[in-house]
Amino acid sequence: MADQTQARSPGAVRRISDILSQHSLPENLEAERALLGAILLKNDLFEETREKIVSEDFAMPSHQRVYQAMEELRTNNQPFDLITVTEWLHTKGRLEAAGGAEHISELVSGVPILTTASHYARIIKGKALLRQLIQKASGIIAEAYSSGQEPEDILAQAEQGILEIGDRVLKSTLQPMDNLARDVAVKLEALVKRGAHVTGVPTSFTRLDELTSGLQRTDFIILAARPSVGKTAFSLSLAYNVARQGQAVAFFSLEMSAEQIFFRLLSMASGIDLQQLRTGRLSKSRQAEAAMKIDELSKLPLYIDDSPVQTILDLGAKLRRLRVQRELHLVVIDYLQLMRGVGRSENRNQEVSAISRGLKALAKDINVPVVALSQLSRALEKRGEGKEPLLSDLRDSGSLEQDADVVLFLHRNTSSRQDEDPDAKSRARLIIAKQRNGPTDSIDLTFLQERAQFANYAPDSYEGDRGV
Figure 1 (cartoon, rainbow, N blue to C red):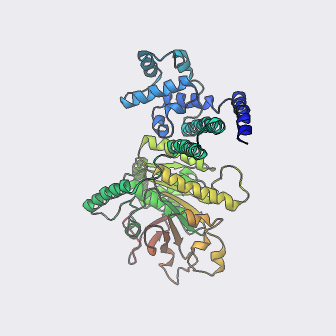
Figure 2: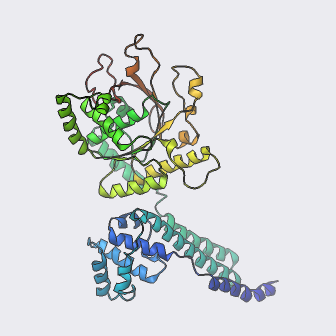
């Protein structure tokens, strides 16, 4: 039997060589050219990609040389463009190996959308991984046929080789406890010295900040309510409060136009009735006040996107591009059910589940709290008027409850008669139904209907700013 195996070995090895010779190794030279060209045009894109790929991940040797030049120039804190990269390669005697000056200049011609640089990097990394697997696997097969080593030794070497490839791809995802312990100790010491209970993004809703310590980075937060309760009003109040503190907010409105949103913000900032602003029925003094507040709003770090169709890929590209310009503190999406999934889904439930998982991953990736508004199912109405929402009322998918770090329900008795309880329509309740790292509770708020604004609860007064 051993002789038969040895007799078959040369033929088997030849068949493997034939397969490899008939098929070129996986590569995508278009993606390589596009990525290098994009970085040459916009150096900040290098920061988005350098954690994903290294120069060896490029299939074409000339592309490896160009990326190495970029790495060297970045190390020396120098900008890289056609001139500096070409000069560096010339100085190092690598210009011809990089394809020459003409080839480098061609990289920037016909570059696709710059915001897709991360996508190109993922393609390049994926092809590099496949090449490494093919090369390692072919070596393992050849070794298994021709080696005189013990099978256990060959298996151990094969496992080690595959693990080394995986380690290059998945490095830093598993962290030892000693590293975490040092990081946590440093963070705890800083928190004690600071003495503040708000460790995340402060919302200016006093009780909410006390219970959550502010909106935490990487948290995926669901804000849900039935229609007409005030989801958009609360989310805009939240965005306005954060932006007023000088912290950047990205607000994605899939339902309202950017102009409508600005009118709402103007009503909040000025205290002028929203309907008066919409109709232009303003006195001279009110016009002057509105003009002053428009100027103040223009200076807020609040970015509004009213594109009617958004996917996770759209959001990620836009947010990463914004992060290059400035630090981002909060993302708000109004609302989740209007988002579109990527690819095909068998049903709406699966599509919403994919969107939910994508938003959680996005929050972790960009290291910013992501607040997504969501509809509630009609099951709430069947339980009777005035009933508060439950986690089971989240619409379309159980994944929303599972993926969210925090679930907030906004509840307001919109059917109360004014003559029965004059304060009823101005009183609202924010329910923390789930908080992965904190307590659950209910918070009383005041709804200022004329401005479509939420504020800290003031039981004895319904005029004024109310601390927001």
